[in-house]
Length: 377
Image (cartoon, rainbow, N blue to C red; front, side, top):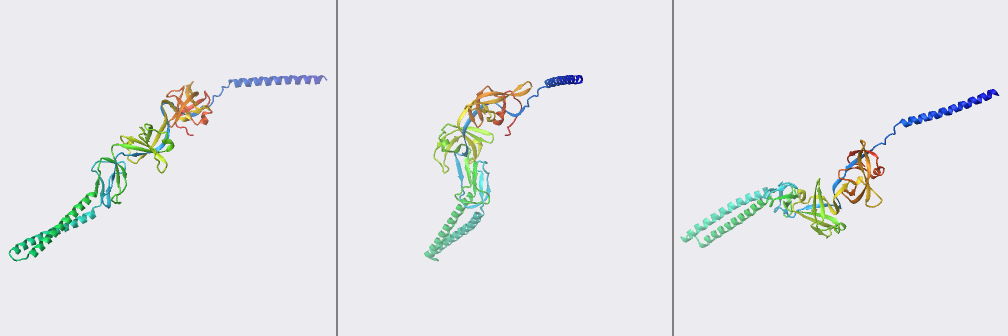
């Protein structure tokens, strides 16, 4: 009985000691966890884009054809093989520069034969004339008849007529030979070169189209829906590589072509970008624009449910690291150059540029690591 009581007391003490030990161990572990520093949130790797000051426009994209206000077609006058051609499209020529050289061998051979015939005809005419003079002298002395004199005079006249006809053929052939060297009639640029050496030039078939060095025109085919919104004096942006130029609409031609397209025409002092006639360049017919606005890339803006509103994430420096700050903006115009916006941002501010799915996961104050570049979505 006494032993059982002692065992019970021992077990109770042991249980109390075990509980106290567990409590002390838990407190020690909690103290150790409190000493461990809280890990920092991982930074987002993002691309950045600057806020710009500029213009944003909306419009219809089309392909504009450059035309010359003064173009000249070069047509051969004779049929012959082309031996030599001048510059290709875009090249410049001065008045009198050789454009085409045709094969003259056939004409030269005919000319040599005609010259021989002319020499023979002149000799025949002289001989007949001399005989007519001699017969006339004999007739005066009774040594010949009037009929014989008239016969030689007629023969001499026929020979002279033949010589004159041959001379006319030679002159015409020399003119044809002159046609074999075709020169530029004006200072111009080559708009189209329509033949190559070895081709046969045919009368009436153009082999060159030249455009004068001054004056130009741009024709832009557009559908009727766009034509109805365009107006004379409206802006059009033309682009060639990295070069752009703004021009005003001069005329609107509502007559539809076989493709159901009308035309917008622009008159210029010179052909745009110095390009030859027939060249096509990208164009945008501006329907709406905003000048001198804050411009941000489209991939920096998260649009809200309320139309015309959204927000961007500005990258700021905080305690030696980059964080983002959510900035509400009003969307004034969406255009090809980006979005025109207004809000608490200024030119030069760095914004997060990413797909909208990434922007939607960002929160105010999130750390980021930014780099300048194009988002690789």
